[in-house]
Image 1 (cartoon, each protein chain N blue to C red):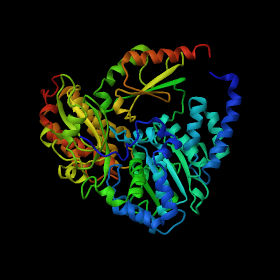
Image 2: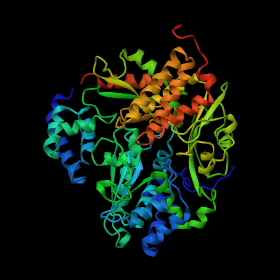
Image 3: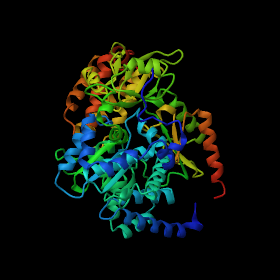
Image 4: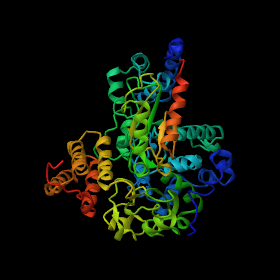
Length: 421
Length: 167
């Protein structure tokens, strides 16, 4: 299968990491053109017309988000890059930063230009130390060559970009928790509305965009929305990075036009399928927080709508292949434990619910389950779904439900009479 | 562990917090970078470093601790000269993360989050560190390692303990 390379173009060339190398392959041409020939409205219109949807997981139309920020009353405005890639199974933003940090910077500068922001922040997770140094270096180069700072490329547009390091908290990938963290607080989510577009960083209009989203922008501005729409589907235009990891022969990253292949093709044809002597039990399509798909569901195309129709999400495109290398009860317990560890503890259904889910699945893992356990689990899930402050608790309940519904046999496999151990 | 240079470190640290305050003016945004700077300089957020942050940032230590304690990678007590963070989330679990944890426990003779008697290091299991294509993976201080075998991890740990001798 031969796919167009937009995000991954020239990634095999290590020089592209430097500003010089990036410029040599056409980098910063979109920015130069935008600043010299296009108005901010033109840039915004191109992104809007491209149909680009947020690549962090939610899939919200990027151009629409930007137009909210642009129209919002309040000054200054901010662009915040969400590089707090913490969804288990996700490493696509790391790949972008590792190979083409300037593509991210160019997209960020274009976003700021389109929305009239003078300051931008990159919130990078602590767990990416090498990427911190890469971005530090890239930002320094961009300042030195006049792509950042006062009067960019000799125009009237100016932008300062700050690199900010997280300190370890999954919840800070949620945009309002990220903003809290950036304001020097505990990373607890805010009540929405108001949305960050109205009242974000320091209460000012703010666009929080994922790394991959912004990295997609230079090509859209340069080649135009029609060109971008020639890839992908009507409702999910363009290409997207997919990460495959877990119980699979060749883990890695692929750039794929949305909807062009199925989940099964990605895992079996591109990532090599099952490991020697192992059986794939299920595939988590979009990062840990997206419900697992069992074998009869693997022929689903990789786009937002098709995945939603299956009751799951394309999410961040982070495919975790679950095979039988680890007993399923252990794997599910470990999966829900993640949410108990990462819950910010602000709201009760999440704080208590994730702890109880972990406790119940640990029971299934250690001493097996009996009939009543299923009812208790269902009840915990019912008390959590739709009742938590942010999607973290909801995700824990949702994935638990999918595991229970699709793998009841395996989860309750060592059913013993109560107290037999 | 670094007594001879402690005052020098403190002075350099104060200058660093001052620079952070200038980069992120107006309010509390400087807190997290300053806490991380303290950890980088002293190995953990020491009481003395909190004194400096209180003074330079004008923010009481209660708030500094309230904020810092929210995040997994900020420590307010000594956790060894080196730290090993082993990912045990799904992709690493499916690729043998438990064997890494077992090997560390046996080699170091300590449980998770306990410091070895020589003060060299501690280990901790952590959530996804974004190295799923290199599973099983770990962070050793700020070094991203993977795919790891138990043998390779233990060898790295032994090197670190050797480095620490005589300080």
